[in-house]
Length: 176
Image (cartoon, rainbow, N blue to C red; front, side):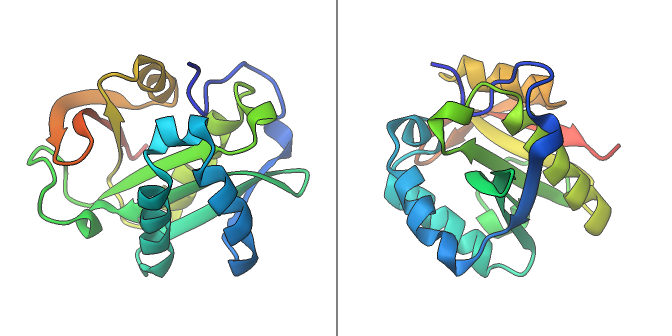
């Protein structure tokens, strides 16, 4: 299974834009959360909805719709990792922001969109916050996702036992 943002060089990167999530985006977000490919990437629809609602209600967070030519095709967010609670790995550097994204529209997966959107989100986080690093937590069973994040500049740090999701790689991308 290809991850939600496995990329092919050169396709569509000039048309990708991120915009703030609006209340009118909820129907499409709810549809995407129930897509089996998104569920494999993010977990069940209820958990995904709860995570996105938390991001959108948190002052130290950024929630974005990924668009191509004005058409919504995915979702991305960044949040100060401290908001996830005290159960985070000890090796997580201070001032780390946790990021994640998915491409909700199947015909746009595998076309260099997720990686480009992730770069735009990283630029926004590093340009507007004091974040020293970005983190992602990726299931150890999802090698394709690990490889995709590696291509996006993330490096393996450790395996962390998530109390809900099980063993996950903690991967970091440091401030340039």
